[in-house]
Length: 66
Image (cartoon, rainbow, N blue to C red; front, side):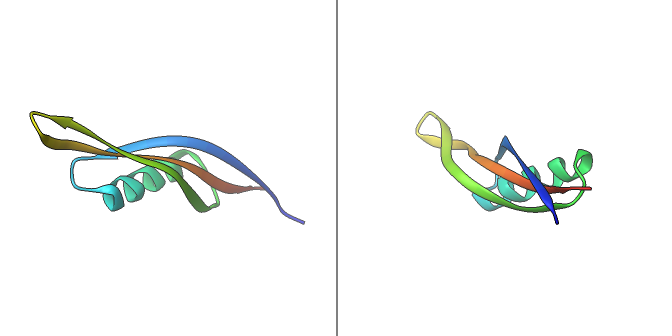
């Protein structure tokens, strides 16, 4: 039997949504073991002077407890 836990994180990138997701998973994996997936709940951007300055994702990261 496996038990999984989910935490919510927010990550951002200047490159794009895909990069924000990858950075968020990589950072979460530094302190969590057995990360198995993530659900991207929300995407947004920050803008300044009519240009996108950051891509932001809010996601739930799932990891299996030992």
